[in-house]
Length: 316
Image (cartoon, rainbow, N blue to C red):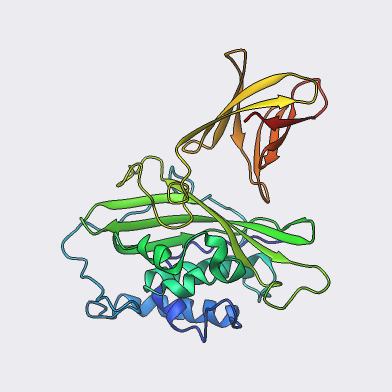
């Protein structure tokens, strides 16, 4: 499959021109992408100073603040520098590129203040965001402006009747006090492929969002939520520790660092290895060399050099 790197700012018009972006309506993704591309050249000529957002607030003027400068692809804080040629062909809504366009519509809706439409793109008509409509909108209330660049989607993975795909995201925003806020992460989308699934369940919906402060840019609001779906907004602290007991009676401890996306394994107080975060369809997955740690909920499987995988459980 040819991966497509979008690498273009998300424009409000990409969402505003949609016939509907609710969880119960069809979304013409191809038409959305065409309209977005067609408006990129004229967007800067539009006077949006007095544009009224859907929440009733007047879009604030940018003022004299320096422009936001997101990191270039391949640089710290930037999107992956994908050298794969961009596909110019049509794509279907159930393709990986179709999933990336859902992400594009999501951030276009947020930029345009259409928070209900953005929330509806999460699974189960928005409930998978774990936020009420009011709390979802409140997560963006601290921003004066909010933009995102979308990278090329990864390969589609299958598991238990579902399909998953990851899409890299680069957020560049400005808080109401004028400080810039740069974030980098990925969105995982899911759709169902089982007999009896509804048309809505067969569409791509947002399954998870993991955003962290972009390296080298400085976090404008350390320790605070960076919008719904980010690690901080979901309640996950920068460092999380857990202890596991395995089937053979051995124990080990893990320190999960959500800032660097690493997991450090220790036995008897001594560090054994530090593993790098991978891209699981769900749950956790860390790997380095012949060390491998995967899990979901309280269950985990640990693989170490020269040993077969062993099942382990969190010690409560």
